[in-house]
Length: 279
Ligand code: NAP
Image (cartoon, rainbow, N blue to C red; front, side, top):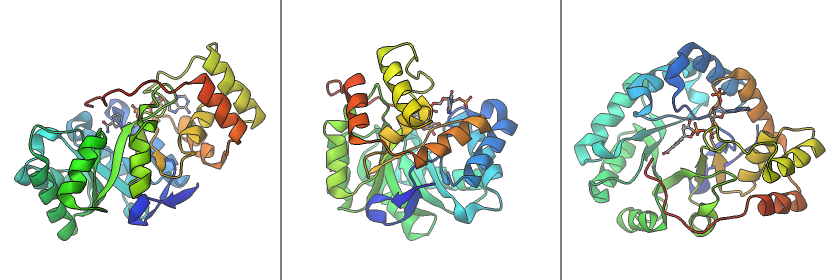
Protein backbone atom coordinates (compact mmCIF):
# COMPACT_ATOMS: atom_id res chain seq x y z
CA UNK A 1 0.00 0.00 0.00
CA UNK A 2 1.22 3.50 -0.85
CA UNK A 3 1.29 6.05 1.93
CA UNK A 4 1.68 9.81 1.82
CA UNK A 5 1.55 12.67 4.28
CA UNK A 6 -1.96 13.63 5.25
CA UNK A 7 -1.38 17.25 4.31
CA UNK A 8 -0.08 19.59 6.98
CA UNK A 9 -0.67 17.02 9.75
CA UNK A 10 2.43 15.15 8.57
CA UNK A 11 0.81 11.81 9.52
CA UNK A 12 1.43 9.13 6.91
CA UNK A 13 -1.86 7.70 5.68
CA UNK A 14 -2.58 5.18 2.90
CA UNK A 15 -3.78 6.76 -0.33
CA UNK A 16 -6.64 4.23 -0.36
CA UNK A 17 -8.75 3.67 2.72
CA UNK A 18 -12.07 2.03 3.43
CA UNK A 19 -15.57 3.49 3.56
CA UNK A 20 -18.28 1.90 5.69
CA UNK A 21 -21.59 3.49 4.64
CA UNK A 22 -24.49 0.95 4.78
CA UNK A 23 -22.26 -1.85 6.00
CA UNK A 24 -24.81 -2.70 8.69
CA UNK A 25 -26.72 -4.75 6.11
CA UNK A 26 -24.42 -7.74 6.51
CA UNK A 27 -22.23 -7.20 9.53
CA UNK A 28 -20.25 -10.46 9.41
CA UNK A 29 -19.29 -9.93 5.79
CA UNK A 30 -18.46 -6.29 6.52
CA UNK A 31 -16.15 -7.15 9.41
CA UNK A 32 -14.36 -9.72 7.22
CA UNK A 33 -14.00 -7.19 4.40
CA UNK A 34 -12.64 -4.49 6.71
CA UNK A 35 -10.12 -6.91 8.23
CA UNK A 36 -8.99 -7.95 4.75
CA UNK A 37 -8.45 -4.29 3.94
CA UNK A 38 -6.48 -3.72 7.15
CA UNK A 39 -4.27 -6.73 6.30
CA UNK A 40 -3.58 -5.08 2.94
CA UNK A 41 -2.72 -1.72 4.49
CA UNK A 42 -6.03 0.08 3.90
CA UNK A 43 -5.86 1.40 7.43
CA UNK A 44 -7.72 4.68 6.87
CA UNK A 45 -11.18 3.63 8.03
CA UNK A 46 -14.03 6.07 7.54
CA UNK A 47 -17.26 5.82 9.49
CA UNK A 48 -19.93 8.09 11.02
CA UNK A 49 -22.42 8.13 13.86
CA UNK A 50 -25.10 8.32 11.16
CA UNK A 51 -24.24 4.99 9.49
CA UNK A 52 -26.75 2.38 10.58
CA UNK A 53 -27.62 4.74 13.48
CA UNK A 54 -24.41 3.74 15.28
CA UNK A 55 -24.42 0.07 14.26
CA UNK A 56 -21.64 0.60 11.73
CA UNK A 57 -19.35 2.17 14.34
CA UNK A 58 -19.89 -0.94 16.45
CA UNK A 59 -18.87 -3.26 13.63
CA UNK A 60 -15.87 -1.06 12.83
CA UNK A 61 -14.91 -1.41 16.50
CA UNK A 62 -15.12 -5.19 16.10
CA UNK A 63 -13.01 -5.12 12.92
CA UNK A 64 -10.23 -3.00 14.42
CA UNK A 65 -10.13 -4.72 17.81
CA UNK A 66 -6.54 -5.71 18.61
CA UNK A 67 -5.06 -3.44 15.93
CA UNK A 68 -6.39 -0.01 16.83
CA UNK A 69 -2.88 1.48 16.92
CA UNK A 70 -2.35 0.73 13.21
CA UNK A 71 -5.63 2.35 12.11
CA UNK A 72 -6.25 5.95 11.06
CA UNK A 73 -9.78 6.04 12.43
CA UNK A 74 -12.23 8.66 11.21
CA UNK A 75 -15.78 9.35 12.33
CA UNK A 76 -18.25 12.16 11.80
CA UNK A 77 -20.67 14.14 13.90
CA UNK A 78 -24.14 14.81 12.54
CA UNK A 79 -24.85 18.50 11.85
CA UNK A 80 -27.82 18.41 14.22
CA UNK A 81 -25.40 17.56 17.05
CA UNK A 82 -22.94 20.32 16.14
CA UNK A 83 -23.42 22.50 19.23
CA UNK A 84 -20.58 22.94 21.76
CA UNK A 85 -22.03 20.31 24.13
CA UNK A 86 -23.54 18.19 21.35
CA UNK A 87 -20.22 17.56 19.60
CA UNK A 88 -18.57 16.38 22.82
CA UNK A 89 -21.46 14.05 23.67
CA UNK A 90 -21.61 12.66 20.12
CA UNK A 91 -17.87 12.03 20.09
CA UNK A 92 -17.98 10.21 23.41
CA UNK A 93 -20.83 8.01 22.14
CA UNK A 94 -18.86 7.25 18.97
CA UNK A 95 -15.75 6.35 21.00
CA UNK A 96 -17.81 3.97 23.14
CA UNK A 97 -19.30 2.25 20.07
CA UNK A 98 -15.90 2.02 18.41
CA UNK A 99 -14.29 0.66 21.59
CA UNK A 100 -11.44 3.17 21.52
CA UNK A 101 -10.30 6.16 23.55
CA UNK A 102 -9.55 8.44 20.60
CA UNK A 103 -10.28 9.18 16.96
CA UNK A 104 -7.55 10.15 14.52
CA UNK A 105 -9.89 12.49 12.69
CA UNK A 106 -13.33 13.79 13.60
CA UNK A 107 -15.40 15.49 10.89
CA UNK A 108 -18.52 17.60 10.76
CA UNK A 109 -20.57 15.45 8.35
CA UNK A 110 -22.01 18.36 6.40
CA UNK A 111 -22.62 22.08 7.08
CA UNK A 112 -24.94 22.65 10.01
CA UNK A 113 -27.60 25.21 10.86
CA UNK A 114 -25.70 25.63 14.12
CA UNK A 115 -22.95 28.26 13.91
CA UNK A 116 -19.52 26.90 13.07
CA UNK A 117 -17.64 28.75 15.83
CA UNK A 118 -18.94 26.64 18.75
CA UNK A 119 -18.53 23.46 16.68
CA UNK A 120 -14.86 24.29 16.21
CA UNK A 121 -14.48 25.19 19.89
CA UNK A 122 -15.81 21.74 20.76
CA UNK A 123 -13.47 20.09 18.25
CA UNK A 124 -10.54 21.95 19.83
CA UNK A 125 -11.61 20.82 23.31
CA UNK A 126 -11.63 17.24 22.06
CA UNK A 127 -8.13 17.71 20.67
CA UNK A 128 -6.93 19.25 23.95
CA UNK A 129 -8.33 16.31 25.94
CA UNK A 130 -6.73 13.73 23.60
CA UNK A 131 -10.05 12.27 22.42
CA UNK A 132 -9.40 13.47 18.89
CA UNK A 133 -6.03 13.94 17.17
CA UNK A 134 -7.32 16.16 14.35
CA UNK A 135 -10.65 17.61 13.30
CA UNK A 136 -11.97 18.39 9.85
CA UNK A 137 -15.03 19.02 7.73
CA UNK A 138 -17.05 17.23 5.09
CA UNK A 139 -19.14 18.53 2.18
CA UNK A 140 -17.74 22.02 2.70
CA UNK A 141 -17.15 24.31 -0.28
CA UNK A 142 -14.37 26.89 -0.44
CA UNK A 143 -16.55 29.51 1.24
CA UNK A 144 -17.20 27.23 4.20
CA UNK A 145 -13.56 26.19 4.44
CA UNK A 146 -12.47 29.83 4.38
CA UNK A 147 -14.90 30.59 7.21
CA UNK A 148 -13.46 27.70 9.22
CA UNK A 149 -9.95 29.02 8.59
CA UNK A 150 -11.00 32.50 9.69
CA UNK A 151 -12.50 31.10 12.92
CA UNK A 152 -9.85 28.50 13.76
CA UNK A 153 -6.72 29.88 12.13
CA UNK A 154 -4.59 28.11 9.53
CA UNK A 155 -3.54 24.48 9.95
CA UNK A 156 -6.42 23.55 12.23
CA UNK A 157 -8.89 21.95 9.80
CA UNK A 158 -7.17 18.70 8.83
CA UNK A 159 -9.36 17.56 5.90
CA UNK A 160 -12.39 18.15 3.72
CA UNK A 161 -14.15 14.93 2.77
CA UNK A 162 -16.06 15.49 -0.45
CA UNK A 163 -17.76 13.76 -3.37
CA UNK A 164 -15.19 13.00 -6.07
CA UNK A 165 -15.37 10.43 -8.85
CA UNK A 166 -14.96 10.24 -12.61
CA UNK A 167 -18.41 11.65 -13.37
CA UNK A 168 -18.18 14.28 -10.65
CA UNK A 169 -15.02 16.35 -10.87
CA UNK A 170 -16.45 19.69 -9.70
CA UNK A 171 -13.94 19.96 -6.83
CA UNK A 172 -11.14 20.34 -9.39
CA UNK A 173 -12.38 23.87 -10.24
CA UNK A 174 -11.55 25.63 -7.01
CA UNK A 175 -11.78 23.40 -3.94
CA UNK A 176 -8.84 21.20 -4.81
CA UNK A 177 -6.48 24.12 -5.66
CA UNK A 178 -7.57 25.98 -2.49
CA UNK A 179 -6.85 22.93 -0.32
CA UNK A 180 -3.59 22.14 -2.11
CA UNK A 181 -2.28 25.64 -1.45
CA UNK A 182 -2.88 25.19 2.29
CA UNK A 183 -1.97 21.50 2.40
CA UNK A 184 -5.46 20.56 3.56
CA UNK A 185 -6.02 16.95 2.47
CA UNK A 186 -9.05 16.19 0.33
CA UNK A 187 -10.69 12.82 0.95
CA UNK A 188 -12.70 11.55 -2.02
CA UNK A 189 -15.89 9.82 -0.99
CA UNK A 190 -18.04 7.65 -3.29
CA UNK A 191 -15.01 7.17 -5.59
CA UNK A 192 -17.03 4.66 -7.65
CA UNK A 193 -20.08 6.94 -7.78
CA UNK A 194 -21.72 4.98 -4.96
CA UNK A 195 -22.08 1.89 -7.12
CA UNK A 196 -23.05 3.81 -10.28
CA UNK A 197 -19.76 3.03 -12.02
CA UNK A 198 -19.38 3.83 -15.75
CA UNK A 199 -20.90 1.12 -17.91
CA UNK A 200 -18.20 -0.81 -19.83
CA UNK A 201 -20.17 -0.24 -23.07
CA UNK A 202 -20.19 3.55 -22.65
CA UNK A 203 -17.52 5.71 -24.32
CA UNK A 204 -15.88 6.43 -20.95
CA UNK A 205 -16.15 2.80 -19.89
CA UNK A 206 -14.29 1.75 -23.05
CA UNK A 207 -11.45 4.19 -22.31
CA UNK A 208 -11.16 2.84 -18.77
CA UNK A 209 -11.11 -0.72 -20.11
CA UNK A 210 -8.35 0.11 -22.60
CA UNK A 211 -6.17 1.82 -19.99
CA UNK A 212 -6.82 -1.03 -17.57
CA UNK A 213 -5.83 -3.66 -20.15
CA UNK A 214 -2.49 -1.91 -20.71
CA UNK A 215 -1.71 -2.35 -16.99
CA UNK A 216 -3.29 -5.77 -16.52
CA UNK A 217 -5.64 -3.95 -14.17
CA UNK A 218 -9.39 -3.38 -13.85
CA UNK A 219 -11.41 -0.25 -14.73
CA UNK A 220 -12.11 0.38 -11.04
CA UNK A 221 -8.41 0.22 -10.25
CA UNK A 222 -7.79 2.76 -13.01
CA UNK A 223 -10.51 5.01 -11.55
CA UNK A 224 -8.91 4.91 -8.09
CA UNK A 225 -5.43 5.58 -9.49
CA UNK A 226 -6.86 8.52 -11.42
CA UNK A 227 -8.48 10.07 -8.31
CA UNK A 228 -5.39 9.82 -6.11
CA UNK A 229 -3.04 11.03 -8.87
CA UNK A 230 -3.12 14.40 -7.12
CA UNK A 231 -0.81 14.31 -4.06
CA UNK A 232 -3.41 16.00 -1.84
CA UNK A 233 -6.16 13.46 -2.52
CA UNK A 234 -7.01 10.26 -0.63
CA UNK A 235 -9.90 7.94 -1.52
CA UNK A 236 -12.14 5.75 0.63
CA UNK A 237 -13.91 3.16 -1.53
CA UNK A 238 -16.45 1.06 0.29
CA UNK A 239 -16.44 -2.67 -0.36
CA UNK A 240 -18.27 -5.23 1.71
CA UNK A 241 -16.86 -8.09 -0.34
CA UNK A 242 -13.29 -9.17 0.52
CA UNK A 243 -12.63 -9.82 -3.21
CA UNK A 244 -13.58 -6.21 -4.00
CA UNK A 245 -11.33 -5.01 -1.17
CA UNK A 246 -8.39 -6.93 -2.63
CA UNK A 247 -9.02 -5.45 -6.06
CA UNK A 248 -9.24 -1.94 -4.64
CA UNK A 249 -6.11 -2.27 -2.50
CA UNK A 250 -4.06 -3.37 -5.50
CA UNK A 251 -4.92 -0.09 -7.25
CA UNK A 252 -2.38 1.65 -5.00
CA UNK A 253 0.41 0.08 -7.07
CA UNK A 254 -0.94 1.53 -10.31
CA UNK A 255 0.53 4.73 -11.76
CA UNK A 256 -1.04 6.24 -14.85
CA UNK A 257 1.04 7.97 -17.51
CA UNK A 258 0.29 11.63 -18.39
CA UNK A 259 -1.15 10.41 -21.69
CA UNK A 260 -3.52 8.00 -19.90
CA UNK A 261 -4.61 10.73 -17.49
CA UNK A 262 -5.35 12.96 -20.47
CA UNK A 263 -7.42 10.25 -22.17
CA UNK A 264 -9.46 9.79 -19.00
CA UNK A 265 -9.82 13.58 -18.63
CA UNK A 266 -11.29 13.75 -22.10
CA UNK A 267 -13.59 10.77 -21.58
CA UNK A 268 -14.99 12.19 -18.31
CA UNK A 269 -14.97 15.96 -18.84
CA UNK A 270 -15.11 18.27 -15.86
CA UNK A 271 -18.55 19.76 -15.65
CA UNK A 272 -19.33 23.24 -14.47
CA UNK A 273 -19.15 24.20 -10.87
CA UNK A 274 -22.01 22.99 -8.73
CA UNK A 275 -22.98 23.25 -5.13
CA UNK A 276 -21.79 20.34 -3.04
CA UNK A 277 -24.52 17.99 -1.87
CA UNK A 278 -25.57 18.04 1.75
CA UNK A 279 -24.84 14.39 2.43
P1 NAP B 1 -18.39 3.83 -3.46
O1 NAP B 1 -17.21 3.52 -2.63
O2 NAP B 1 -18.25 4.81 -4.57
O3 NAP B 1 -19.06 2.52 -4.05
C1 NAP B 1 -19.45 1.46 -3.24
C2 NAP B 1 -20.07 0.40 -4.13
O4 NAP B 1 -19.07 -0.10 -5.04
C3 NAP B 1 -20.58 -0.79 -3.35
O5 NAP B 1 -21.76 -1.22 -4.00
C4 NAP B 1 -19.49 -1.84 -3.51
O6 NAP B 1 -19.97 -3.16 -3.50
C5 NAP B 1 -18.99 -1.51 -4.91
N1 NAP B 1 -17.59 -1.91 -5.08
C6 NAP B 1 -16.53 -1.57 -4.30
N2 NAP B 1 -15.40 -2.10 -4.78
C7 NAP B 1 -15.74 -2.80 -5.89
C8 NAP B 1 -15.02 -3.57 -6.83
N3 NAP B 1 -13.71 -3.71 -6.72
N4 NAP B 1 -15.72 -4.18 -7.84
C9 NAP B 1 -17.05 -4.01 -7.97
N5 NAP B 1 -17.80 -3.28 -7.11
C10 NAP B 1 -17.15 -2.68 -6.08
O7 NAP B 1 -19.59 4.37 -2.54
P2 NAP B 1 -19.86 5.02 -1.13
O8 NAP B 1 -20.09 3.97 -0.12
O9 NAP B 1 -20.92 6.03 -1.37
O10 NAP B 1 -18.55 5.87 -0.77
C11 NAP B 1 -17.45 5.36 -0.07
C12 NAP B 1 -17.42 5.83 1.38
O11 NAP B 1 -17.33 7.25 1.46
C13 NAP B 1 -18.69 5.53 2.18
O12 NAP B 1 -18.81 4.17 2.49
C14 NAP B 1 -18.51 6.46 3.34
O13 NAP B 1 -17.58 5.93 4.28
C15 NAP B 1 -17.96 7.69 2.65
N6 NAP B 1 -19.04 8.65 2.29
C16 NAP B 1 -19.04 9.87 2.91
C17 NAP B 1 -20.03 10.78 2.62
C18 NAP B 1 -20.03 12.12 3.31
O14 NAP B 1 -21.03 12.83 3.23
N7 NAP B 1 -18.95 12.49 3.95
C19 NAP B 1 -21.04 10.49 1.68
C20 NAP B 1 -21.00 9.25 1.03
C21 NAP B 1 -19.99 8.35 1.34
P3 NAP B 1 -19.78 -4.17 -2.25
O15 NAP B 1 -20.11 -3.38 -1.01
O16 NAP B 1 -20.74 -5.26 -2.57
O17 NAP B 1 -18.35 -4.66 -2.24
